[in-house]
Image (cartoon, rainbow, N blue to C red):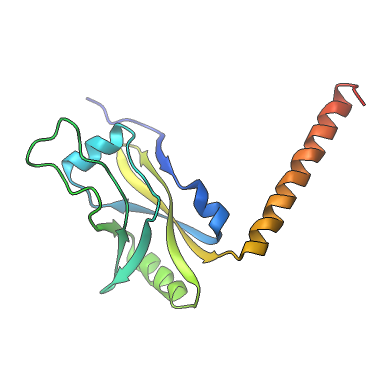
Amino acid sequence: MPREQGRKLVASNRKAYHDYAIIDTYEAGMVLTGTEVKSLRAGRASLVDAFGHENDGEIFLHGLHIPEYTQGTWTNHEPRRVRKLLLKRDEIHKVMGKLRDDGITLVPLSIYFQNGYAKVELGVAKGKKSYDKRQDMAERDAKREINRAVGRRAKGMG
């Protein structure tokens, strides 16, 4: 059977873009068991409360919930286990250097399959204050209103 091509999105963390200002993004592989891969291929995963953490020069993903595979047997995985991320050494050093700053965290933005391999997109992020969130919402509403007005104008409605 040929390897699947392209990118298939499994889960995305839309709340991360609301709660954090994303500074930089990285793509990493994950060390997974067979039943975890099968559960991901079924489109089942939750990035809520997940975060990256450095330990002994390696990056690990905590709090990622991949539910047990329904057809799995006693070999099934633990849903919220700590998973090792696969990054190149220079990428790990860059991420660790950024994580040393105050208020900076590593947040998973999405999980997807890239040419058959499970990948996670990580964002080096800084937490937003509540007034930053309100300002972003106001800008988004203003852009939406402008686009509506332009659309009405293009249709000749005003």
